[in-house]
Image 1 (cartoon, helix red, strand yellow):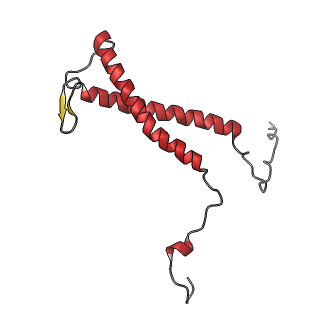
Image 2: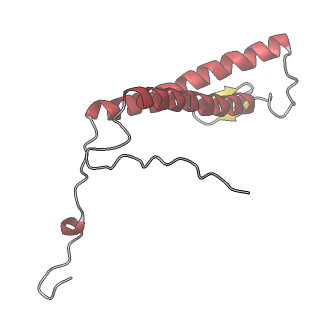
Image 3: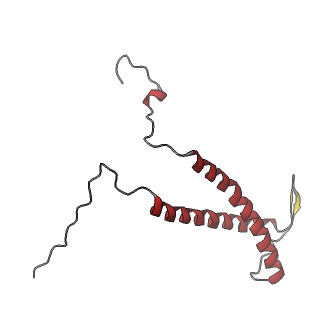
Length: 128
């Protein structure tokens, strides 16, 4: 900092050389809203189907009714909450995997216009 410069956080911040397209923010916002709602709906269906079919034995603590102040009594609340969290993790993981595959196929090249190409060397031959 020079003698006559005033310290300002704004003057020190540099602009990024890239800009994020607004549609990516919209897609991210929609994903943050849609995936948890779909995960909750899927969790309710899975827990109900598990209660009818008996795929996995559920402990009594997970299937008890919980009374929430705003929503009232909810049956199998803890089981639904656990399955919802698992489905959210799986859903975001699948979207991340899909995005990485699409980005690797369509995205920009790994080397920019100012990068040198990688040096190709042959392995050294060993002498006995």
